[in-house]
Length: 156
Ligand SMILES: Nc1ccn([C@H]2C[C@H](O)[C@@H](COP(=O)(O)OP(=O)(O)OP(=O)(O)O)O2)c(=O)n1
Image (cartoon, protein in one colour):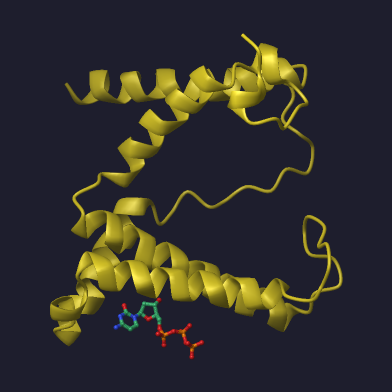
């Protein structure tokens, strides 16, 4: 069952990557930034659960409180970009300290998002697979290539 389970997922994942391969002639975009594979989302959920358990903070971590905490952290990310005008990929001109500050704030957003999903009983990694499958159906690559129109703007 485990390997069947895994295969079903890799079909979905390969669906994404082979589509992007078709769009760039089979090569990954050179210089594309990638993440480490660890910790995964379940690792993050477990580490945050341990952090809150050790402090007896679960009593405060209901869904609405986690949502508000997450939105607050999104605001802190926004502050880092405020008044800077457009910022190019890779954040040229940002200091190491500014980059580390951003890494901290983005992590706060992710930590609260993962705990919010946990407390709402949303299996986030699997939900992302389902949502990306829907996105691919809504925006067929052949139809929308190179255009950022919303799906309601496409005529058939
Ligand atoms: N009740 C709390 C308070 C904090 N945290 C954890 C999750 C976040 O990753 C981080 C948030 O900490 P702060 O609220 O102190 O926020 P910042 O780290 O952004 O500090 P500041 O608001 O001073 O910039 O700590 C938590 O899980 N539950």
